[in-house]
Amino acid sequence: MILLLLLAAACAPAPVATTPTAAPTDAPREITVIDPPKPVTDFMLTNQNGDTVHLSDFKGKTVLMAFGYTHCPDVCPITLARFKQIKEKLGDTRDQVAFVWISVDGARDTPQRIAEYLTMFDPAFNGLTADSEAVRTIISEYGGLFQINNAGGMKKDNYTVDHTASHFLLDAEGRWIRTYSYTSAVDTIVTDMLKLLS
Image 1: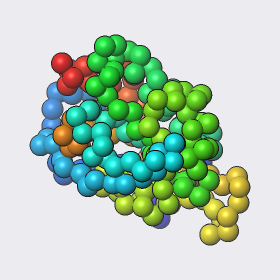
Image 2 (image 1 turned 90 degrees about the vertical axis):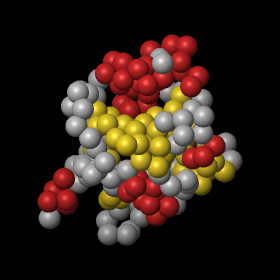
Image 3 (image 1 turned 60 degrees about the vertical axis):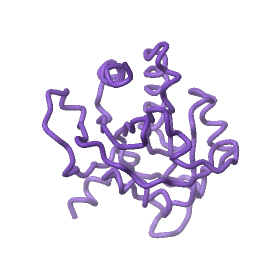
Image 4 (image 1 turned 180 degrees about the vertical axis):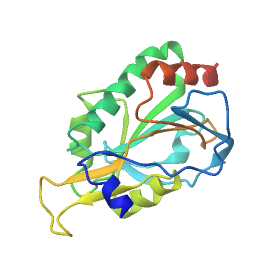
């Protein structure tokens, strides 16, 4: 019942489960430090160019990742606009980072649709999609979730999806090392990432 209440608002940031690997640190409260870093399962999704992409393809780069969908009215465009700001503020270190945005709405978010959507922010971002159950498996590994509001299974073109809005940071070895809350300031994230990238 509590979960349903938390997911009631359309495209509201869904809660993230507290991970047992999160260690107390002096980091700002908007940042959850995963210590020790947590290995995560490799995945296989389709990018905005229609190519198959594995998480392991980004090995050697730090990955800043979020989940969303292109019909999202608020959280997702704000997230991608923030990703653009973060990329700009990272300066010369931006080439060490892969920005990954995974759709939770595979039924509507085709590679072509995602490619068009990303042009409003940064076409160099990695927009990935797959069927919802495949993405559900991925997001759950980070303590996240989503719920498709499609009238009990009756598909409509204008349905919404409630989803976890946090950002997840993976190190160059592909291990989960940070969760940034949706309320984290861009400068807070940038400062933390620059320390890790230096």
